[in-house]
Image (tube, rainbow, N blue to C red; front, side, top):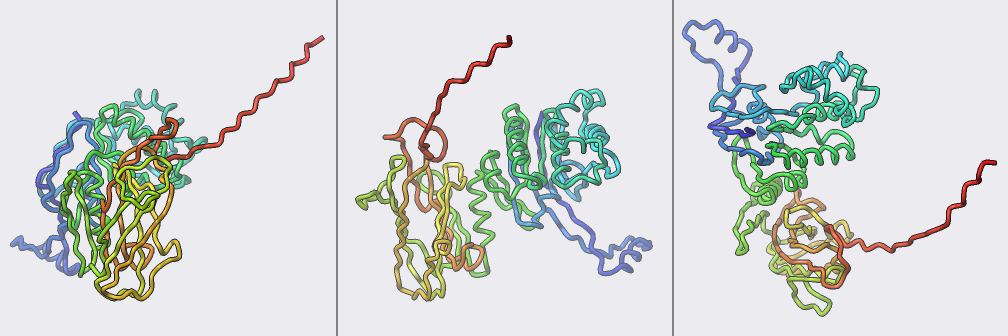
Length: 416
C-alpha cells in the first residue's frame, strides 16, 4: 500500500482558432477536427515506492499542478495511466473541497468523506482536527469569512488527521504564517516516519532537501531530470539563470557528488581555498576557529559591474550562510579582460561538526538571475570538527554566557 506508478502520462487541451471553428467541429458530420492539441504534459514516467518522499519542482507553467491533478484523478489524462495503491489525502488548490457557505465543522465532514473517512471516524477525530487547526470559534463560522491561512490550516488538519497511505501536497503550505508552516512540516515528517508516501510540489529548496529522498524536475511539460534533491535543486537554480548565451552542465566529482555549473562565461572562478590563520590551505577546521575563504576569479571580457557571492551549505544542500560583495557595498566597477581578482572573506567558523560545501556566484547584481557570469556548486568541500569545544548539537556554534540566579522563596504566612 502507498505506491504511485505513472506510465506514459500526457495531458493535452484542444485549441481552436476561433469560436466558429469549435461550432463547425461540433456540427461536422465528417468528424474532421478543427482544433490543435496543446500538450501541457507529455511522456511522464516515474514510480514512487511505499514510504518514499518525492519532490516535484519546475518553473511556473511547467505542468506541476496538472500532474498532481492527474495523479489524484481530478483531471483525466489524454494518454497514459496512473496506478495508485492506498488511501490518498491531497492538498491541491487552496480550499478545494470546501463550500464557502458551510461552516468549518460542516466542511470537515464533507472533505473528510472525500478522502475516505467515515462519519464515525470524523466525529472521533474532530477534537484533534480543531486543536491542530487552531482557528478557535471560526470553526463554526462560514468558510467565506476565513482568511487563506485559516483555510489552509483547516484543510491540512483534515487531510492529516488520520495517517494516509499517500499524502500529496501542492504549494498550499506556502500560504499562512511561519508558525503553522513549521507545525505542518513537523507533522509531515512524523507521517513519513510512520510509513506515509509523500509527493510534494514546492519552490522551497530547504523543504525539498530536508523532507524528500528524491526530486523530479519538470520543464515545459516533460520530465527532464530526476535524482538526489540537492543535485536537482542545484540544476534548477542554474536553469533559472540560463539565458540564450549561457550553458548549464553537470559533472560527477571524484567523491560522488554532482557539480552544477552555469553562466555566460565573462568571468569564472579559477580557485577556491579555505585558509587557516597562517594562510595555509585546510580541508578540516575546528569549530569556532578563524578562517579565510579565498576565491580567485579570472576575467575573460570587460564587465561594467562585478559582484561575487558565496553560499555555505550542509551535506544535504541546505543553506547555512551566504553573502556577496554587493550586500557588503564592495562591487567592482569596470573590470577589464585579462585581470585576475582575488577575494578574501575572513570569519570565525561557527558551524557545527559536519561536512559542508561552498557555492560561488559571479554576477552584476545581488541575484544571479541578472547577468549570471558563473554559478558553481560544490566549488569547495570542507569538514568542521569539534576538537576543543564542549559537546553541543546542531549546525551552529552559538556558545552562550550562562547566568543562573537562585533565591529563597518567602514562606507563606500560616492562617491563625
